[in-house]
Amino acid sequence: MKGEEWYQEDSVAARYETKRFSRGGRLIDQREKAAVLEALGPVEDRRILDIAAGTGRFSLMLAEQGADVVAVDISQAMLDQAEGKRRSIQTAGTLAFLRGDASTLPFADNSFDAVIAMRFFHLVDHAARFLKELKRVSAEMVIFDTFNRFSFRSVYNWALPMGSQLVSPREVTSWLDEAGLELEASVDDWILPYGLYRVMPLGLAKLIRPADARLVSLPLVSTLVSVSYWTTTVS
Ligand SMILES: C[S@@+](CC[C@H](N)C(=O)[O-])C[C@H]1O[C@@H](n2cnc3c(N)ncnc32)[C@H](O)[C@@H]1O
Image 1 (tube, rainbow, N blue to C red):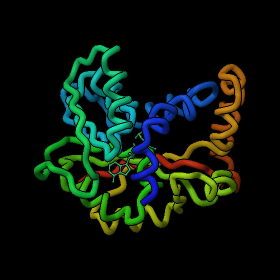
Image 2 (cartoon, rainbow, N blue to C red; image 1 turned 30 degrees about the vertical axis):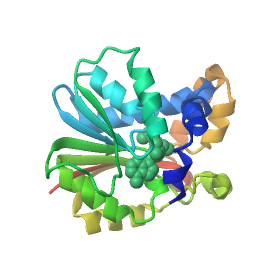
Image 3 (cartoon, helix red, strand yellow; image 1 turned 180 degrees about the vertical axis):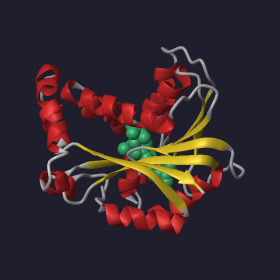
């Protein structure tokens, strides 16, 4: 999988957040964090595993809010960025970083209350195999997102160097069946391409975003949503 290798480079890791979440892209960061918090509910004192934690966007937020977090990523370069950010925040909960592969986790069954894996499944070939492993270590829930096949992202997705994959909701449902996870909720968002937000000043993006959010609920247009946030439970 290209995504495993791409993020190993120091220069890629150093640019990861500025490339995606500066300017209008800050709205994307905020939306993803809100989606995770909404799916998790109260996080204080909960044991949360952040899979493909990257630069720690979610791990740091959750530890700041009192969760006990373990952040796993295959790239030391990405984890180094997360460690750097950690020095400037106060964590109410605990936070540990671990380099590892999400397909074979060094944890006993049910070690965590919840597992999150954001911006991960577009990088893997056998999603159900990974989901089974995430389910094994989670006592309650597994939360993740996917990029959708029938969206503006399909126009430029082929050119992305990390080998991004787009999927349909039906494919995700079949992963859940295979992994033995129950779907609790899924939320769709974003019609306009992320690339547009990233080039826009934040002020302009804030003006456009409410219209984009409204488009998601329109019949026909809604079939073009870019992203789905999935909340699943361990049965
Ligand atoms: C797009 S980044 C997402 C980082 C973070 N979740 C976020 O949303 O900002 C994808 C991350 O997946 C990690 N990754 C790729 N394959 C992995 C694997 N098999 N096990 C653990 N991490 C992996 C990469 O190193 C990279 O940090």
